[in-house]
Length: 151
Image (tube, rainbow, N blue to C red; front, side, top):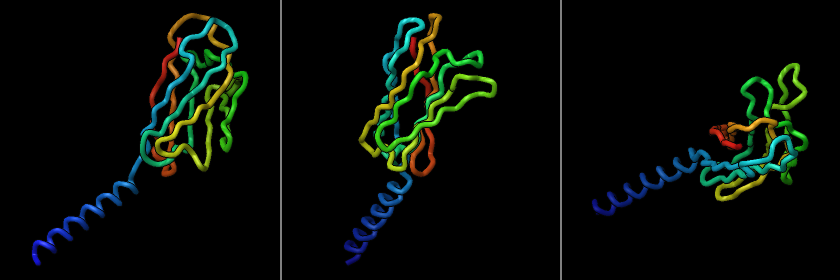
């Protein structure tokens, strides 16, 4: 009887651990941009692919443009939103060009799913490597951030 109780206790502890793990599951994003190279001063259609490898649904995707001198190197011409998503452009004071795009959706990107966010931008007029900063947030508000490079 003691062995049966020990087994039941162990299973109960394991079940509680699994339930708590699921409740605290933060998202694990994978983000890429394409194309990674473009011709100088041309309108380029870019795609930001966001995958949710694990955890809570991603409900917000933010992309900050490269702007080392305070002005964006890429000039946003048009932004597309996947069905069920809305976007917002952010501008710096006294700037006519946005420096950030934020897409949001109540449903979000579920675990194991991906979504593409498209936009058209005029590429820089100078050669170089350009750093974009992305940020994703999930249903619980947990945020992840990193950078991407283009030429």
